[in-house]
Length: 174
Image (cartoon, rainbow, N blue to C red; front, side, top):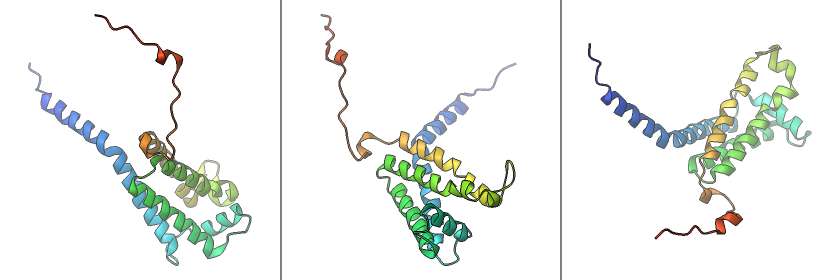
């Protein structure tokens, strides 16, 4: 009994892995950027987003009533559009990751602020809570984007301190 030649399948697999390695982070940035742009833009259109009421109440609660009503929704929408633009521009990826993580913390606030509206029973999330909980994926994406960032994309390049053993030169054999 002879086994089939799997070398072609192996080559295709290697090519797919190389493609995923090259395209994964850019596709992640593009996908997140489009979603943030879309959801942010919807908040800027009157009656465009189904979460307007929740956004108004959350921003009002987090700002102790300083930002309320339509202005709260506009602030949320503009911040999401700005995050989208930074994501899509591929500038400052570590700063982008910080913005994403901060945004996720803020949009997760209703889980604690309005628990009666977020949970039907323990571990039984309402549709609004599910909408918020999907942001776990955003956290993972932010970590990947930050980890893939190059040193030149940071705001400040700090010198790396040299250790003493770095100064010891190894003799070259002749």
